[in-house]
Length: 111
Image 1 (cartoon, rainbow, N blue to C red):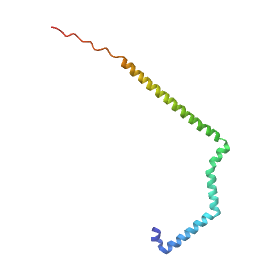
Image 2 (image 1 turned 135 degrees about the vertical axis):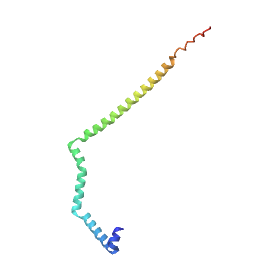
Image 3 (image 1 turned 120 degrees about the vertical axis):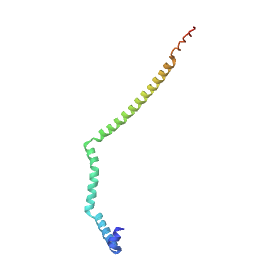
Image 4 (image 1 turned 180 degrees about the vertical axis):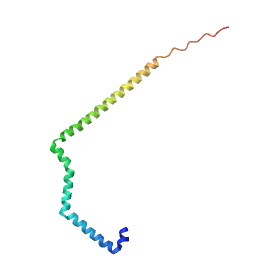
């Protein structure tokens, strides 16, 4: 809308055509292809370095070890929770079986 106000309708269409031609030439230029190739290489570089260094296997082993650890931690947590529930139930049974002795009745003073 601003371009329409600043350039007017005739200049805006000419400017749009020039811009479109410039963008078209840019995308078809060897420099653009070289830029895109360099960007692709930059994106692939970390993966390539990992492959060449041979650390992918170590990364996979570390991921597996982490998954194993989480599984063991989950099982241990479940065992601890089960033991805690069992202990709580046992303590409740013991508490219910131990009844405090009834209060002694004091003989009424017969004066």
